[in-house]
Length: 495
Image (cartoon, rainbow, N blue to C red; front, side, top):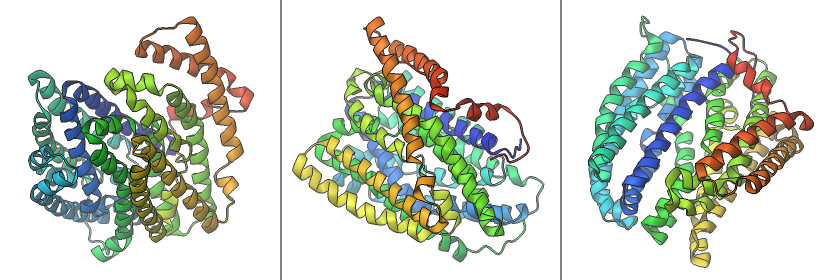
């Protein structure tokens, strides 16, 4: 199941991310309808606390796989995976103890007494899930990303079965969902242990010279950067949760998300490119190859992402209503705000920075802006007292991080920012998408008014895609040159 074509490798990762998103979205759609708004808000707060603390307790260890594994042979890789997984189990234990012990304090900080009970019941889950981390880094390093798609689909399907179905059939509360989490976490742990052994079947473990000092030297700046990154995202959730209540938080949690398809594409690209970049840097081969890979990835990402961003931006209210019901139609204002960052985060600069060993800069920039966002949003709450203002400021901070990092990449690679971020080309692609959706919506609103959100989105989406492909040549855009290679099997690295 190994294929060396980078597009195919990226496709498998993207499919895995898509299945995770799709099944996770189904879960959110169902739970938001079966829970009361208060219960759903508490459930999302539990996930918020878990995701925030996960970065600290995982200690950046899952990130070391795609950096170190390409630099060692498979036998040594087996020893590295076992070593890191063992530590993840211990940190998972510490995480579980922390959640149980400090659940009351966390509930007081977020002003939700019910959260204390929920976190106590949820506390065994980190012990079971942290050892499962690192699957993507392992299989991307060994060019077997199809297993990422299989694992993500399987694990998310189990979550749907054990968490959502009991809530539906037994009309349970958020605690029912947590009981399901515990059961499915036990099953997922067993599956993850099996999957982590797949690349090393019939391979005897060989001791590597990679010790924890080397691992921590690389991972600790990433831990700091990840903590800062979580702090940046947590600031929005904290201020809205504390100052605007559970119901506004539930609306914000559903709406303030980037377009999942965008993060699938950029995330999959980063996962595939990172091991390649790491090997190029380690082998001291031609750095022009590294830059060429990155530029090619950016070009393809923009052509795929911008049309999606424009479609979702122009149909945000219908999308939120379709996904979460009319009760959450107000989430569209958060959704529209969050989407604007997708015009900028097509730049996959992190694999290049990390493969070059620029982890300190990566950490520094995130730490600085973490302080700025917490201070800035405090004053925004006091001055404007408006949750949407918090969302707008959050997007501004993210754009600043991207553009400053882009400038740094330009300096260390010697490539002009115009080449790294071809503004003229990006404007053309964005304008083509905006022109197309405007024409389609104008016709739809005139010819077929009063449709349901599902009908409207289906017809608008079909018309948009068709007109986009038909008029692409007018703007010198070739979407097919990206799509077609996905279906061609190739053993050569064409990217």
